[in-house]
Amino acid sequence: MEHVDVIVVGAGISGIGAGWHLQNKAPDRSYMILEGRGAIGGTWDLFRYPGIRSDSDMYTLGYSFEPWTNPKAIADGPSIKAYVEGVASKYGIDRHIRFNHHVLAARWDSGAARWIVTARTEGREVEYSCNFLFMCSGYYNYARGHMPDFPCAESFRGQLIHPQFWPDKLDYAGKRVVVIGSGATAVTLVPELAKQAARVTMLQRSPTYVVSRPSEDAIANRLRTLLPAKVAYGITRWKNVLFSLYFFNAARKHPERAKERVLTMLAEHLPSETIARHFTPRYNVWDQRLCLVPDADMFAAIKGGRADVVTDRIARFDEGGIVLESGARLDADIVVSATGLELQLLSDVAFSVDGRAVNLADCFSYKGMMYSDVPNLASSFGYTNASWTLKADLTCGYVCRLLNTLKKRGLRQATPRIAHDVEAQPFLDFTSGYVTRALERFPKRGNRAPWRVHQNYAKDLMALRFGSVDDEMEFSNPAPGRAAVGQGERVPA
Image (cartoon, rainbow, N blue to C red):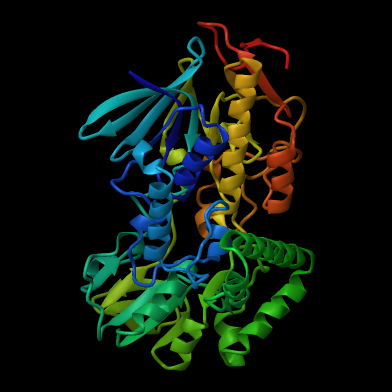
């Protein structure tokens, strides 16, 4: 059985970042990356729908160590994929990837202080072993998106598709298209489809907060002409981090003021009746993720008569479209169900510790990346209110700190342990449908450190880059043949 010090699962934006951190901060550790698909990029390789783009600026979605130099701050999917592939190639990370290896299970053996990882490839199962397992496989099911059970959908004679599985060469030119949903995918699709479709209608049950911002960051582009690329990138990155932190915290502290501000921004693009009916949500700003409209493209499509928004509920499908609860109907040749993702915890890998199955939903999340009583396992989970990569970068750095601490102390096992009472809370404080549908499958968070999951880059930076690695963390050399959960031989730090 092939053995490496660290197995990383996933070759998306998190997994490639993990490879760089391991090479640079724990360079004496061997590693491999197991990727279930046949390409680098994760989300940015999977999603192929028209207009696919980031909903975070690339100065924070990009890696801290590799400047984003494209003038577009809000980038299209192919450009992001090319960036991630370029990083993997430039730093030799791609040489560590085993493609088409779908991880099925991982079992911890205390006697050997290692994980045995089972993966399927080319129709057979293979096993690898490692001392530390780092899950960078994202947070949703790549094989299945969320598709509601629409009444009478089978009677619809047009095409009903999900953006996660966009058909190759779909011809929507001159067609009537209905996009169901009002999240990031919907507001991306509508203006792009409207360029060729006869008419595009965004059908939503209730409004979402939508804001416009320029696709290019003028300050960043100016700084690049005056300063070295890395310096300009670092300044822009921190500018955007601090602005997003300020806006998020201000919105939580003064929700009515934040709502008024967002609606005032919308008034620059849309008439008041449209805003009141279709763009004024019932919830507070940042109770769900804000939807980004670069260069006001969707608003321009609406004003230009190429797209519209309908706020109503679906009663049923019929042969030619959708009948609404109000009695109105929408004629359609193509219906796109932009109804969200199906969240998945660590790719539904079956974990066990010394022969006992582990349900991670019963665990507490440690610093937003590890799991109570589960040894030598970490996962990358980004922010809901900021760029994914900001948290992924901090998580990778912390994993390297942990690995270096184990080596320095001559120990083999690091296990988060709850030292005193902690109150269980939902892992994510977010009301989006794709989150609430899956919360019971995610670990709990605590009401105190280190079990509290922050959505705050500054706090996480202090805790993960500079905080103690000994916070309710048991470092040990497990006794062979004895259970790791609470029964290891503890070695004083």
